[in-house]
Image (cartoon, rainbow, N blue to C red; front, top):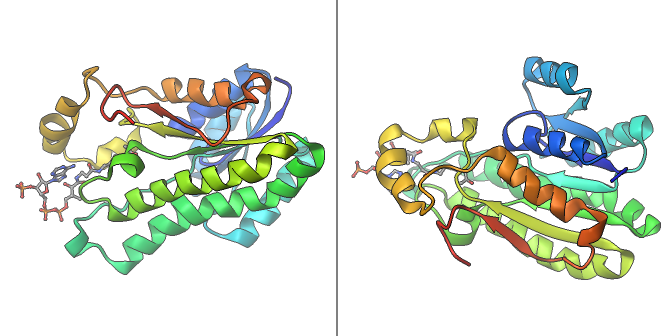
Length: 241
Ligand code: CAA
């Protein structure tokens, strides 16, 4: 798969596993990150994957950043919208700021990244846009009115755009992970994890980032051209759609 792939939030957690897996599949990969320079530099040193710092919530930064990636590596064939944040709070305590931060990154960020690469994909008659949603965008989640709304929005965005991309050879899909063993889980209190979340997962464990990465490399492959507008769910049986 000798394609150019761009992975947002691609130097840590699920994103890092996706970047590595696409590289192993033969892609030239670029990864964006928001803040942690040290981790990004270590990731580049270890993998040779170039990292770029910008905020996906900022449209102009996305336009400028993508232009830099394309200058360095060539046109983006595969976009993986992985960057995401949580600002969990029960709704009666959720602040407008917590709502806005999550919507800006997890939903508008997907628009901001996809919009600049879309004309090039249309012109070249090939593209793969894969967005990492969440089980919690499918089923809702206590203390995540913001996150569930944004992640459900990502699925609607994908279904609409799939219809527009189909004739131009662009597929647009979602991967919806369940609870995956990453740093994001560290914000969940142990008691909630052990007594509420784990008992709901029939396979009896968290998922691994590599298990999500395999879903992405499949959807990114040339051979997956008939799959578009779909949501590939990987959650250990926790929620059946
Ligand atoms: N399900 C059910 N009940 C939950 C819960 C959950 N996931 N999380 C918290 N609660 C309950 C607590 O057990 C507690 O109940 P009790 O009062 O009976 O003990 C109550 O909610 C907490 O209420 P508080 O008003 O004290 O809440 P707080 O202001 O201190 O906020 C919290 C705490 C932020 C909600 C914290 O408990 C938390 O982070 N919970 C986890 C929420 C969660 O599951 N988020 C998913 C993160 S994973 C992810 O986002 C990645 C993905 O895509 C899958």
